[in-house]
Amino acid sequence: MKTLANLCLFCVARNLEQLNRVGKYLSRSDKELLLEWLCDHDGFTVARLPAVTYNLISPHLQHISFCYNVQINDGLLKKLAVSGCRLKSVTITRCPNVTGILFYFYLIPR
Image 1 (cartoon, rainbow, N blue to C red):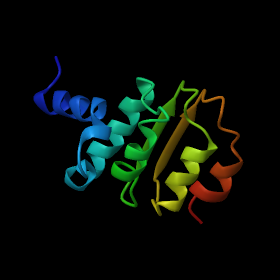
Image 2: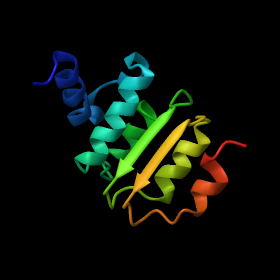
Image 3: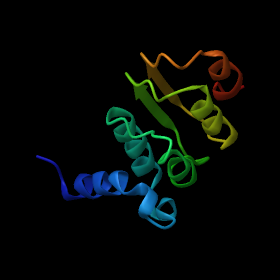
Image 4: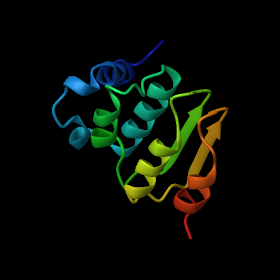
Protein backbone atom coordinates (compact mmCIF):
# COMPACT_ATOMS: atom_id res chain seq x y z
CA MET A 1 0.00 0.00 0.00
CA LYS A 2 1.31 3.43 -0.91
CA THR A 3 1.36 6.27 1.57
CA LEU A 4 -0.41 9.55 0.97
CA ALA A 5 2.98 11.26 0.69
CA ASN A 6 4.07 8.87 -2.09
CA LEU A 7 0.80 9.35 -3.96
CA CYS A 8 1.28 13.12 -3.78
CA LEU A 9 4.84 12.83 -5.09
CA PHE A 10 3.71 10.66 -7.99
CA CYS A 11 1.05 13.26 -8.82
CA VAL A 12 3.77 15.94 -8.80
CA ALA A 13 5.93 13.79 -11.11
CA ARG A 14 3.10 13.35 -13.61
CA ASN A 15 2.33 17.07 -13.65
CA LEU A 16 5.78 18.54 -13.16
CA GLU A 17 5.68 20.80 -16.19
CA GLN A 18 2.35 22.37 -15.14
CA LEU A 19 3.39 23.21 -11.57
CA ASN A 20 4.93 26.60 -10.87
CA ARG A 21 8.32 26.43 -9.07
CA VAL A 22 7.41 23.20 -7.27
CA GLY A 23 11.09 22.43 -6.67
CA LYS A 24 11.25 25.23 -4.12
CA TYR A 25 8.87 23.27 -1.87
CA LEU A 26 10.42 19.81 -2.24
CA SER A 27 13.01 18.32 0.09
CA ARG A 28 16.24 16.74 -1.14
CA SER A 29 14.87 13.24 -0.60
CA ASP A 30 11.65 14.13 -2.45
CA LYS A 31 13.67 15.32 -5.45
CA GLU A 32 15.78 12.15 -5.42
CA LEU A 33 12.66 9.99 -5.23
CA LEU A 34 11.02 11.91 -8.07
CA LEU A 35 14.10 11.56 -10.28
CA GLU A 36 14.10 7.81 -9.69
CA TRP A 37 10.35 7.57 -10.32
CA LEU A 38 10.66 9.55 -13.57
CA CYS A 39 13.46 7.22 -14.66
CA ASP A 40 11.38 4.14 -13.89
CA HIS A 41 8.39 5.51 -15.83
CA ASP A 42 10.14 6.99 -18.89
CA GLY A 43 9.51 10.49 -17.61
CA PHE A 44 12.56 12.19 -19.08
CA THR A 45 10.78 13.26 -22.25
CA VAL A 46 11.91 16.24 -24.33
CA ALA A 47 8.83 18.19 -23.21
CA ARG A 48 9.36 17.43 -19.51
CA LEU A 49 13.16 17.76 -19.36
CA PRO A 50 13.25 21.57 -18.81
CA ALA A 51 10.86 21.19 -15.85
CA VAL A 52 12.98 18.33 -14.46
CA THR A 53 16.15 20.38 -14.77
CA TYR A 54 14.62 23.50 -13.21
CA ASN A 55 12.69 21.84 -10.37
CA LEU A 56 14.56 18.68 -9.42
CA ILE A 57 18.24 19.04 -10.21
CA SER A 58 19.88 20.98 -7.41
CA PRO A 59 23.16 21.21 -5.48
CA HIS A 60 21.57 19.41 -2.52
CA LEU A 61 21.18 16.04 -4.25
CA GLN A 62 23.16 13.22 -2.65
CA HIS A 63 21.90 9.93 -4.09
CA ILE A 64 20.99 9.20 -7.70
CA SER A 65 19.79 5.92 -9.15
CA PHE A 66 19.09 5.61 -12.87
CA CYS A 67 18.36 2.12 -14.18
CA TYR A 68 17.16 0.58 -17.45
CA ASN A 69 16.33 3.77 -19.30
CA VAL A 70 17.27 4.94 -22.80
CA GLN A 71 16.31 8.54 -21.96
CA ILE A 72 19.22 8.94 -19.55
CA ASN A 73 22.20 10.33 -21.46
CA ASP A 74 25.41 12.29 -21.05
CA GLY A 75 23.51 15.58 -21.43
CA LEU A 76 21.38 14.87 -18.36
CA LEU A 77 24.44 13.81 -16.38
CA LYS A 78 26.18 17.02 -17.37
CA LYS A 79 23.21 19.01 -16.04
CA LEU A 80 23.63 17.16 -12.76
CA ALA A 81 27.33 17.98 -12.75
CA VAL A 82 26.93 21.71 -13.41
CA SER A 83 24.28 21.95 -10.68
CA GLY A 84 27.09 21.61 -8.17
CA CYS A 85 25.68 18.56 -6.42
CA ARG A 86 28.11 16.47 -4.38
CA LEU A 87 26.73 12.98 -4.87
CA LYS A 88 27.49 10.40 -2.21
CA SER A 89 26.16 7.54 -4.32
CA VAL A 90 25.43 7.13 -8.01
CA THR A 91 23.88 4.09 -9.63
CA ILE A 92 23.65 3.98 -13.41
CA THR A 93 22.62 0.57 -14.68
CA ARG A 94 21.76 -0.38 -18.23
CA CYS A 95 21.35 3.14 -19.58
CA PRO A 96 22.71 2.63 -23.11
CA ASN A 97 22.98 6.34 -23.98
CA VAL A 98 25.44 7.02 -21.15
CA THR A 99 28.98 6.76 -22.44
CA GLY A 100 30.64 7.10 -19.06
CA ILE A 101 33.05 9.81 -20.19
CA LEU A 102 31.20 12.67 -18.48
CA PHE A 103 30.63 10.59 -15.39
CA TYR A 104 34.30 10.35 -14.57
CA PHE A 105 35.09 13.99 -15.30
CA TYR A 106 32.12 15.70 -13.73
CA LEU A 107 30.29 13.56 -11.17
CA ILE A 108 33.03 11.95 -9.13
CA PRO A 109 34.06 14.34 -6.35
CA ARG A 110 37.75 15.20 -6.18
